[in-house]
Image (tube, rainbow, N blue to C red; front, side, top):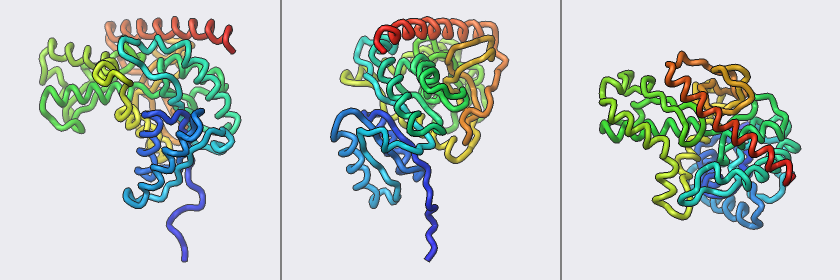
Length: 321
């Protein structure tokens, strides 16, 4: 009897079995996208989480394999590697406060993972995201199309949510694009935001739009302040899952992705969020939007902040690794 299940299924490794990593494992498995390896340095934790997810397979009606491990050898042959490992933010802590600790964690994770999966596409989720993506790019030596950061998809989803709540419309009808760094200097493009094709400038006044933009910029901090013991994880996992899906299914979706720029938008040697087409080869192309003077200036300011933190991270790594 022939089987409808192919002999080879894609493998996605998730480094970091915290809330984002474990939720992402659940999203990927329950969407039937790939088998999953969940890796963490804490002995027993990824194994326990993987077993818990496996025991739900009959209820969720899928047959994906989820493996928990502390050994990078178990990640060999991964099509995609997602790095979520690192300290989460705490109340009053900015993403940049995480730089010193997370830089070392991400570089070590990237080097270990690429050694076992040299053909993988890497997605970085650890904060401060733009800097961590740059460091992972350096550590792996990968071409820029195969390493990227998840930020813009999440920030755009937050902007869309706030617009939908304000107007009382279906969130799926709202489309928005957020560029720049994953932090206070992100650049939500209000004039590109629409509800079923209608620009929000036709539906909301300038003061309301400015308020929603500011809430988007502080979207992560708002959740940290409310939870107190950690940060967001449901929406970040969903945003990352969307990127994984676009790659594995070769959807060529146009998404805001943190990528290494080489002259695009007048920026060089920096990782920052811009619109990209994402398919089975990773980043297929970068779309250069016709930005207004104020939008371009905001993107340049955002890039300067990222570059400053990249320089700080290089100094840190020079003394710790």
